[in-house]
Image (spheres, each protein chain N blue to C red):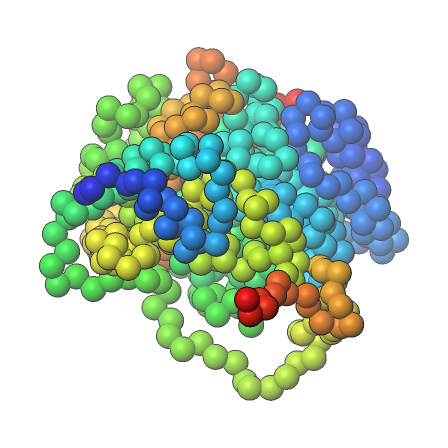
Length: 459
Length: 100
């Protein structure tokens, strides 16, 4: 059978009895068996659970829940009751959670089928997947390249047809950048839109639950299932959908175009601008003056919060002891301890929190003029495995376009656009004011409709 | 900013409850120095009179009713399931040593 690439195709096929949910699971499992050893995507395959759920769905035979039959992979930082959850780290190599994340529960209740747990940079620290203690995941579009990170397996799984959708996390770009490198739609929601209960914490003022899909329509379905208060994450609030405007105005910040931006990516952004103008969306130049301070602010606040969140791993209640931390986790814990330590707190941490305020003001000003901001996701169309491995600072600079949405707490949708001359996927992101996700979906759909976008898998 | 030294690295490793090998100290010292030097460029930004932001929701004092919901908690076996445990307790490293 041809594996369906959208939720609608999946459910139409199930309802018309073209295939059963069990046959769908067969297909995804066959793909995993065929390719997982080449690409190192899944850390745990939940074959038994997947068949059990599929049989339940087939027994009822209606497939009317929003995610009926949607085969889902979870980044291995999502707690899954009775299923090993490692966070990509040897510290948790045999950890079995006693409860599931709210998002896992919501997807299950909406008819979704868990197919397994996927690889990631350990504790979500990284932009390439290479920091996983279980080895790097390879990009299904070109196995010499990284799939992006830290949600490396989540992106590789969907782009290689090992699952229809997946969940990841986005603390500084960890969903949007791998989506961009793997030809997928990726969403970093508004801070506080989706519960993080049961997601192993990295940086609590920046962490969000990310989603990977092939189309913007599917992203909207996933988002509407996942969002909303659960009573367990005090940062989450319910909100009303924004009104979808007819007349839209987008901004592109002049600060994005500097020497670090690859010319092919720059040209692609210009083409995206032209597409929007063609369909009657006004695109204007704006200024986000603190753009060059995004990475420094991020690499103070984030390690500070990492050092606190990883303090709980003491090997007493669960997991192995702290000697099992990988190199990147150690670097970030120490950086965090440094910027929080006596004598340095004011100069680094306090300073970063103040610059964060100024960055938020930049966005508030921008959104008084425009409905959304178009930006590159990554400065390049991808990099090879090993290319940045020995220079952590160089790797951190990969986050230059993505950290801002986390710092400001705003949503951003990564949208695939085209391929580079080397055949690597490229795309852009569109950021909006807090809780404007549906407006971003509208913008993504308008763009894909105009370019007649068709989802594609790598293998 | 002064250069990060081996002594600084050992100090933050201690604060972080991490034990580093000599090879790690050698590797991390220049790497952390370079990163600290990079993030220090925030000192250029004028933040006089700017209030710090620690979270972006605008929510304050989110609380729940002070009632026990037993299905939201773990029972003793569940709580201990990640360790070997000892007679229903967690085993912790000794913090007191014999007087010498």
